[in-house]
Image (cartoon, rainbow, N blue to C red; front, side, top):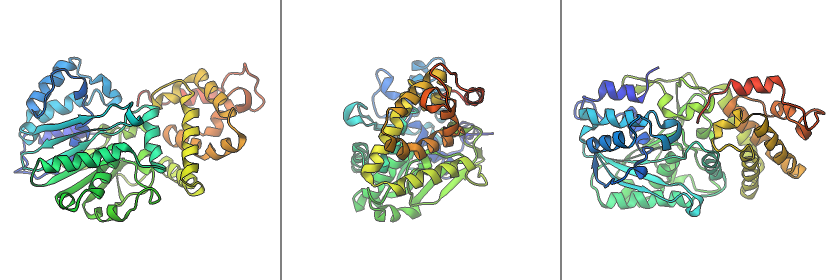
Length: 395
């Protein structure tokens, strides 16, 4: 299956004056915000794409942007191919900003790309693949974030320093930040926003934020998800999802570099997978059954159980082995029985939707209270081990 970087090889030498800006361009620029410019010495903005490529190649000589996790192998190639052709070769990266994630327990990063067609693409970075990053996505179910206000402030300031068409986009939480900024921006700024791109991003709850302003942007919004979407199924969106193929499995589909591209378009899928639909059903049930305070408690406790596994990457939960499972089991059984009951659907949705493993089956394989009469020294069942070993590594 071909992806974003293949597209840049095919169309890299075709200028925006020949083939206008399209949906794959939007995705490529959304992923550009994941490049770890913050870790490269002597970076100063604005930065043309050729300079950016030289700095990235020097900082990551093995061709892997290591701080970017699972996206690391794709990002240096993305920058290299953007720099190599007419389409993005004269583009300029500007207004790169990143916040200290420890401050206010948030993550915020964005950059702007000034394009040859005189438009400006504001690219908002999403969360990383850590459990903490996924927790932040799910916390959108009951609250707004300082990072969202940072995104709005960012749009307002970039708009004041530019003229002409604005395009906003982001992957994962980045798409949520872009939508929040576009919806709440001053009218004179919103009028300049020609396109809003949300790539497998969490949505909004009308108890937390009114949908009126979001709906006003619906004719300019594109919401794109892979077949096995999990993050994109959180809460509501102003636009209907466009479902694309992916050559990955489970949570690995969240990596947009695995999405199918054919020519200048995404490769459309028949629809969402059964695991994605099941996650959506289970998670919607949890949301309906709890008010905002209840959601806060459910998310905190469910992710507390997952974090007890001892791993930091969300995808590594499945391969944390007997030690990780036992630690989750202890964390779960230490909760009040009513709390355990309230988070069961969430755990089923997270583990079942992301990894294709039934949570009750995992529990049955664990020692102590998780097992069916198993003693403390009992090992997880072979079926659970086989399921865990079959899962992909990485985020």
